[in-house]
Length: 145
Image (cartoon, rainbow, N blue to C red; front, side):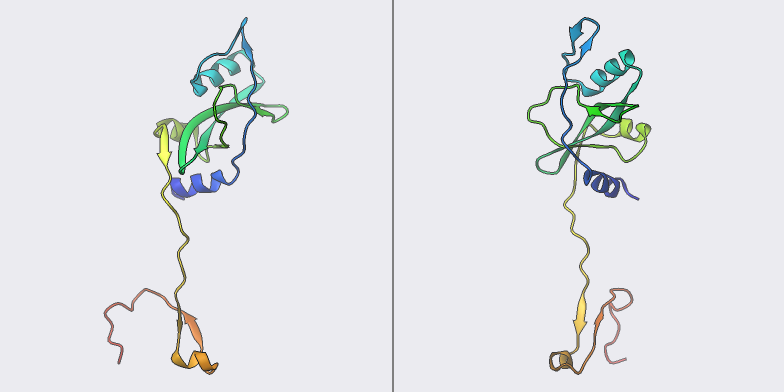
């Protein structure tokens, strides 16, 4: 499955993740680098893991982001202050793939393929049959054959 198809599928599970202030050592976390914040947090809290994923910004823009998840409870928090808050979803692939991707991805517009329905002239009177047309093998063929 293509990256865009996986991202589109993963985005269906996007949700707002609550922000929580946490202390590292004796001070509050204060950076805007979500990946660094997540790694620093997990280094001091081994019962948590970093979750790599995407923020769904307006205009179909995906921004790399990271949150933390408690391994025992599954509870998730964002440890990086963001304004405004936007939905997040976990990357539907490997950490290596995620790390190799751009920091921002613009999702192309997507419309499911339309099915072309061909109706014979007699269909309007209820005497003909309709069929779904295939676009394979019809281009350039002689209509009288």
